[in-house]
Image (cartoon, rainbow, N blue to C red; front, side):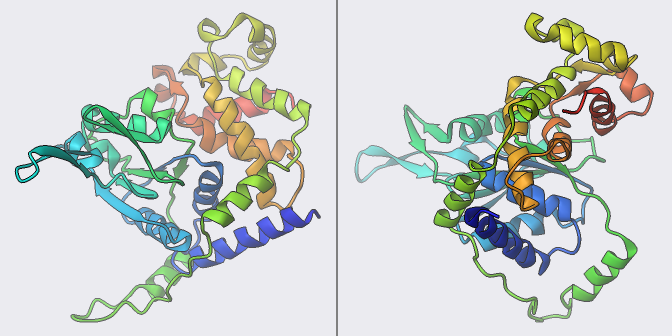
Length: 341
């Protein structure tokens, strides 16, 4: 094994071990968090309350050792509460900039779907351009800059659906599921005492990542070989998510062959994934290969990355909802019908 790949995998395993001191199970979520951090993307975490979404983000911030800010999204929150604003200073006779909490390395946007569209759109420039405009001046955000947003899928009253433009800015969407009974027993055993004045005796986490280490991991990902046939496989998967009316003519022939094989597939999809999804899948497949300690990308890496990369980028039709199909079910059908190289 290449020395760089071996060192990167050792570092990733150390990160997993540190996260496991706080989080029981949830390996897919932990790997997804680490993958997005290495890729330089943002994450949307979806799960019912009490599944340690916030704890996972806080734990990740601790092992990174960088500045962390938590923002609780509510219906009355204003964009200036996030980005900052201009303050008039009487003594100086001029305006000064008061920066908001978004000027941190790791941002937890808790319950992002509880804020209205004006507040959600304030994140768009920050997530894509890595800068914030206050007044007439744009200010760069710190590097690395990492947004982790959580949302509750079971409550709809008092929530606002995220616009497609914002959803597409998230590299991955991770679904946080219930633990197994054995894992829940371990969670109960680890839980801190609720006695008055008690101290949290959980083992502290070590900052095992810094800017230099993150840069090393990103450089190692670039060394992972991705064959041209695998790249074509990635594009075929993303193209296959697009209904006939939204496919380009150059990719139409191959997509039509898949459509004929997958009878009735496209009636479940209103809009498919954009080329940004192909870029994300290309990047994450390499990272998943690195997680497995391999120097090349396999079709299994692509399939594993396809779910978190595509599930928030596919707009399902009413027929899918009527038939009880979610995005993952549609992605499974697509993967089963796209030829594997």
